[in-house]
Amino acid sequence: MSTVTWSAGTSGDWLTGSDWSSGAVPSVSDTAVFGQPTGTSTSPYTVTVGPSSFADVAAIDISAASATEAFPVLTVSGQLQVGTLNYETSVEQTPIDVLSGGLLTIQSAITDASGIAETITVAGTGTGSELALLSTSVFNSNVSIAFSNNASSINAGILQFASGFTSGMNIAQAISGFAWGDTIDVGNVNLTGDTASYSGTTLTIKNGSTTVLTFSDLSTTGAVTFSLSGGVITAVCYAAGTRILTPSGERRVENLRAGDLVVIVSGEQRISQPVKWIGRRRIDLTEHPRPETVAPIRIQRGAFAENMPHRDLRVSPDHAILVSGKLVCARQLVNGMTIWQEQGSRSVEYFHVELDAHAILLAEGLPAESYLNTGNDGFFSNADAPTTLHPNLTSETAYPLREAASVAPFVWDEATVRPIWQSLADRARTLGHALPDLDLTTDPELHIVLNGRSIGPLHNNNGLHIFCIPPGTREVRLVSRVSSPVATRPWLEDRRLLGVYTKRIMLRGADAVQEIPLDHPELTQGWWAIERDDGTMRRWTSGEAVLPLPMSDTATILEIDADCGGTAYVTGVAERRRAA
Image 1 (cartoon, rainbow, N blue to C red):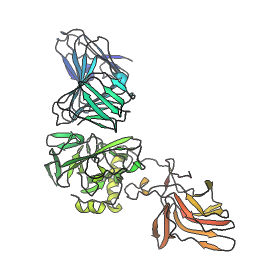
Image 2: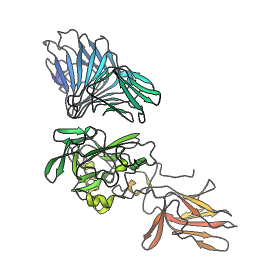
Image 3: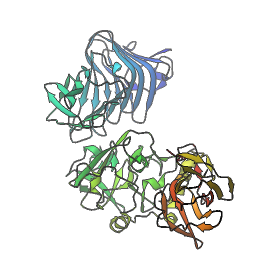
Image 4: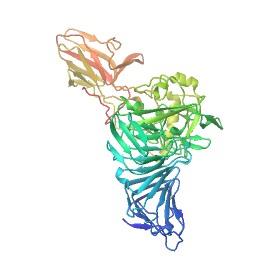
């Protein structure tokens, strides 16, 4: 690891290579050193990591031998990532300011060999800023964190811990200036259902009588009440963090309140309108029976056009985006390149902005709808209606109302949506992306399950599966791979889990042949509705369908004429349902 020293005689930009002793900007394996530049005055100097800038170094050493020495200040409005931050100063100062829109990530530790108090400020103006500490061991007792929320009605600062907390842990680090809208994300500690009490400078979080977490040196600015949601402490649908355009600039959606003005798009005009209501809901995806129906869709920066959106945007699957003059649900635009559904998230918090009438907002610069009440207010935890326990954000039941009441044409049919999907996929390719390489098969691997035992077909040719059924069997289960049409054709709205497309079921005994009609009233569990294919009755299973059989004292032959129905199965992603 090499050492690179700031050698400029004045303030400057981090990305200016000539201002460093090596003639090049420090890299990820370097230590960046800031002290008194040779031959300079005693005036302070500032090194700036500006907007859209990114810097990544192994360590930063900041030193100032005396109060008369020129001491450095780092300002971060872009992204600065550092392994270890070292202070060796005899001057109490604020050596790092994380400004509007900035992100400072410290991976390993903060050290302070001099024992002099230092402060890192997290600003709260404009679009806010974030200090991310990847472990609780980062803290040093001489280094404090100060929120600097200069206008409480504007987006606030974020202090994030990635990991390292255990139940009952005390954080003695000095944190000051915590004001309305500021947030502390404590990573792996789930605070849902817990209570918070604040006295003096101590914030205590309990679950019943058990102390979950304590901040023993947390001071606030102004009247603050604490909101706990998941692993986030907030001084009190878009995903949390989404920036909505207002007449005074962009603001995080979670910081908007009724009466605040937002900018809407109406034709070629931009008009200010007041917020009527903000709906919110945090969903625990680990407890949802079908998390894919609620997990957020991420739209990558520039997915629609240059700087549209100008920052990655996360929305709920049913949130409609205005594209080509039409409103299309985000889930129908997924292409696996620049638009995808996030997998593996533990929780998500959604916000919806309701105005006096349905309108188009600008979220991260992308036109997207405001909240339209279609009788779905049970989704929100702060609505008057009873809260829906496990919401489904892929339901089509409200489509007729959305079509009638939307400010722009709301569309979902394949003929309209597929060209829109294709244009976004083509743009993604021009940006250097490639469609995901899916491992597909048309083999449903159909078998039956009888008394907990899996039995494969005696014969399988062109979709005709033949099974031997023991005497006295009254019921079998048809088990196969499953797939959803949207797995390979995301512009569709057919999100059923499909097993095999069944054409005919025959039962052959020693003395008789019997057909079990597909519309038999006992075909209920695991069967989708009857369909007509070129006049032929056919029916999908769900991957595990119950097939009742008439009693027979002798062995019989069961013939199942079924195939994949033209829908390929995606293998290797839990596509196969087996008997329990």
